[in-house]
Structures are given as C-alpha cells and as structure tokens.
Image 1 (spheres, one colour):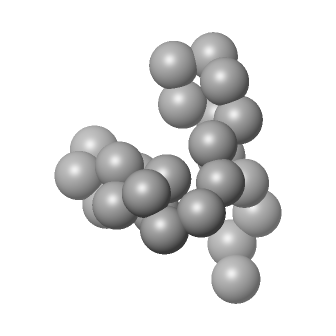
Image 2: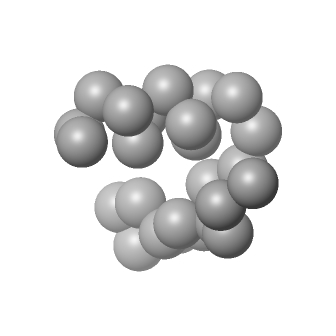
Length: 25
C-alpha cells in the first residue's frame, strides 16, 4: 500500500482518502 498523502494540508487516511487521490490523479 502507498504511504499516506497530504491533501489540503491535512493527512488523510482510509478509503475516502484513496478516492480523493484517485479523483485528483
């Protein structure tokens, strides 16, 4: 699994964070 990525200046974790990362990338 990939390390946690910081989104909007806050570290997000969980499936929701993965969905957001997928949306941006």
